[in-house]
Length: 470
Image (cartoon, rainbow, N blue to C red; front, side, top):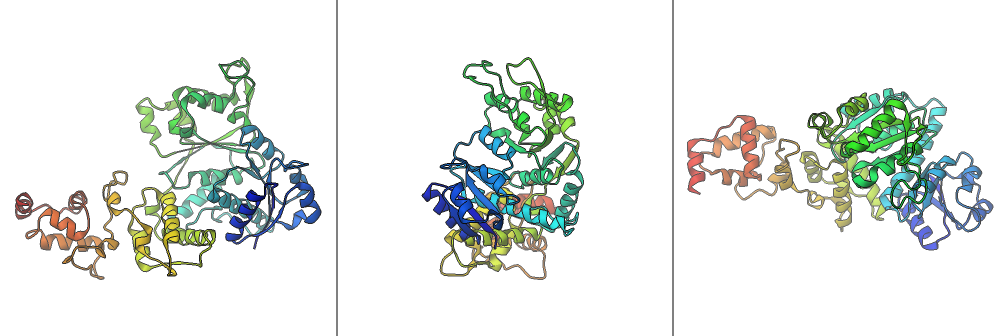
């Protein structure tokens, strides 16, 4: 069991954080100040120290040197760029803003402790190039290929473009690229381009000089300069305004950044990792994304597979999330029923891992008086799946057959789902309308029409007549 020391002067926050970590199977000690922490405990005995930035007496950053090889995670309610960057430059392994999200804190703790343990194993030669990425679950062929590509490109300074649907884990890949590079002793600055208003994005990225615009009362370092020597991760780069794209292109081409209102440029050494769910090539042809910037950032492209293409990985991820949320909510260990597994495997997951996280969390919260998660507790919206335009196809879900209208047939174990669908339609289309067929199969009429097209089953004259008569 990993051992964590919390150094926080506010009793309510300290107690809440202790309970959160204990629910997630960590051994926790606590102290209200740096002085008491060092007098009561041997800091080297802990796997992680979580400390508030501002404490009575000495600041939390003093623990960084005192802790030696023990990583220090800094919490701050003064979530400014300056305090966070300064803490990490002093050697903090990461920072988190208060008030923090419970999942965010737990994930940060797992990441930091996992990284420290991996570093210890690497020192003894126990880590190989085929090791999976910390925080990512999956042994499917597509994920093994992704891991191998990450291991190959990470040690280089090549610009990387990560492409994948929303919720596939693009930031986890970016962090892995940074951690396995020779820049991992410098900062990785993450920016969600879609979350910053167009009017502020340039000043946030490139900084500004005092008096550059109304309200610019002091000089401010931009995020590009803050990442000097490290990695700049631009998530949803497709949302970056064209003016900011031009400035970013200069950073990549010339290795320099000029703050707003300044006449002088500053040299920077930054590795860019960008991510998007959009088709940047198409956007560049439409004039919505600079073509020269597209070619500049598309040196190495990593494609993240959607959850629906990862096979058995989905169940492994679901079971891992189930363990996490059982610990978080203080429930005895639950397991997935066969019906729940069928639902998980047959659903398209348009929101990918993020949607699966929500479904598993909801199921754990709602589950009571049983040690098994049933399919109904997942509350998967199968109707949404039928109408999903992002995937271009629908999946015939066995879970739907359990809720079919009276008279609908049970699927034969000897038939594939597609075979069953085709046989049922061919046997009943002369006596049922399209609406009745769809209802018996538990799908929408749109979904029925799409499957007809895909399987080459034309509507018969009698089916059309019945549908018109209805």
